[in-house]
Amino acid sequence: MRRAAVLGSPIAHSLSPFLHRAAYRALGLHGWRYDMIECDEAGLPGLLDGLDASWAGLSLTMPLKKAVLPLLDEVSELAATTGGANTVVFRDGRRHGDNTDVYGIVTALAEAGVRRPGSATVLGGGATAASALAALRELGLAEATLVVRNPARTGDVRKTADRLGMSLRVRTFADLRPDELVISTLPAGAADPFAPVLAGAPAVLDVVYAPWPTALARAVTRAGGLVVGGFPMLLHQAVRQVELMTGRTDVPVEAMRAAGETEILRRQRSASG
View 1 (cartoon, helix red, strand yellow):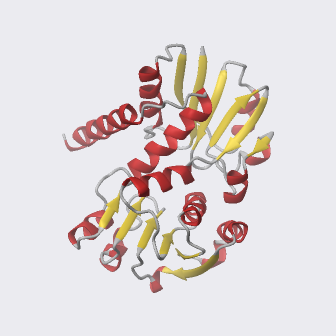
View 2: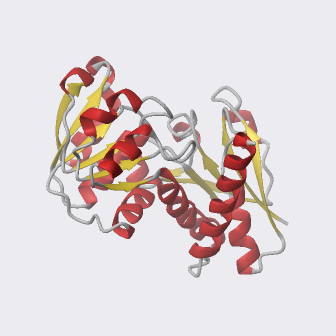
């Protein structure tokens, strides 16, 4: 038996088990198991210490991406640059940390036809915002705008921008304006009040996947803009995690996509019924 799991708090809403299990089924990995474990920062060290040799890897969500770094034996350059790891792979008795969120953002945007934006704005100042900056750097941008409620609490994201060699303009939501590409890393509902202001953006990636569409997505779509939801980002970062944890390069993207979309639809029907 080989094991993996997603950790976080809260974790009950996670789609990761549906994505990873779909990959295991399509790949014929019948001896693999993927679980969901409620875990906060205080519980993370003990949980890691208690894992045996059957464990292949972990997916990490809030609030663990930064907290895990000092508990790892090795950290990829990208995880170090962004200041967070959403993936832990156990190999040769060592803990290896990586960041697949950047891959997820870049691939989701490319899939929608967004490959080289001329300018970009990121909403929010957390771990996902740092990954969004790294994704924008991969897309060729040397500068970006960060919009947050409190500019004094952007130290970690500023450090990421410095490590990326990016120039970062920091604004508050009072000075919000559309850009060629807007990436919202805000939690569900938090971007709703700003939908009318951002409706004119040519392209928006909103990392929320439920409830969907968000008010921001609806406003941009009505104005004729391109919208990328949070599910494609979640899907593609999970694809990369499956590659890292299993060593397989033939990861079944469409089988994972179908499983995730089916579960999202089931939840929507359950919520409305």
